[in-house]
Amino acid sequence: MLIVTVLMVLACDEDDSAEPSTPILELSFEDPVLVNVTDYNDHLMEPFLSRDGNVLFFNNLNNPSVNTNLHWATRISDTEFQYQGELENTNTESLEGVPSMDDQNQLYFISTRSYDQTLSTIYQGFYSNGRLNGVSIVGNVSRNEPGWVNFDVEVSKDGNNLYFVDGRFDEDGGPYESNFVLAQKTGNAFNRISDSDEIFMNINTDALEYAAAITTDELELCITRVDAPLTPDSEPRLYVSRRTSTSAPFPTARLIENITGFIEGATYTPNDDGMYFHKKDNDFHRLYFSKRVLN
Image (cartoon, rainbow, N blue to C red; front, top):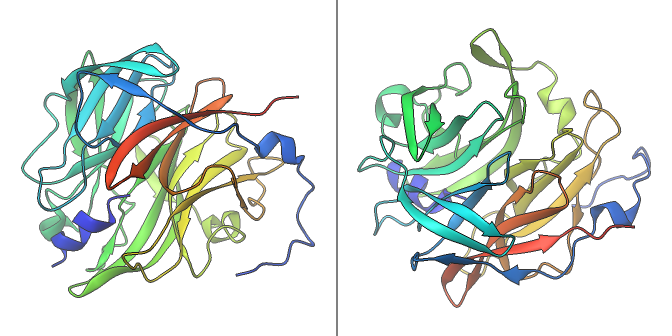
């Protein structure tokens, strides 16, 4: 979640009767364990694990007091990575964060570098060996309205779908609204789909929803949700929803009850048999891992 820094740039119960039944076990995860990133000692937020499981991307603290940048590390085991440094040819004095990548190594991320001029924040570039090449804005996805910010992004494995949020801010605070949108790729361009509201009709609520993580088959969605408006005592949590087909709306998202505390920004493992996320422990953000409960 890049709510805090994005703000600086700009200065429910539901009816379950229509839901398809979903085995609870499929949406259950084991108690989380702390993950060590050797030689990295700063805040770790917004993790994303590459589609082959070998590279972890993330950003440091998303606070105006620091320069938020993208970093990378390589996998040693499920619970240990080796820090490699900042992502080259990517970071600026503005905010860069919330990485996501398809299986063709096209990496998407959020940057506020041109918001004042373009009202856009989603960027892309081709990843290779710790570096991005050809960094450019992803067009046609912004609302192009001052105060509305896309502050996170998740790309599907095949690179054809972008899951992101519209967040409404003003000079006094925000976000006051934050809901999911889906854009699909046609040729080399993404465009919002006409039935995006229907796809997320059971997911978007009066609370703030953000930080999508999507499984390989795009049937299961993990989101972060927190009540609006934000307060110093706000505690975001992870919720999951599994649908029956990629053309169907996601059913009501269920809280992952045993992943507790200040939790945000999940990312699935390549086989979708676990997830990583960041958790705030005593005001310090750390990386955690939780395996899926299997039959």
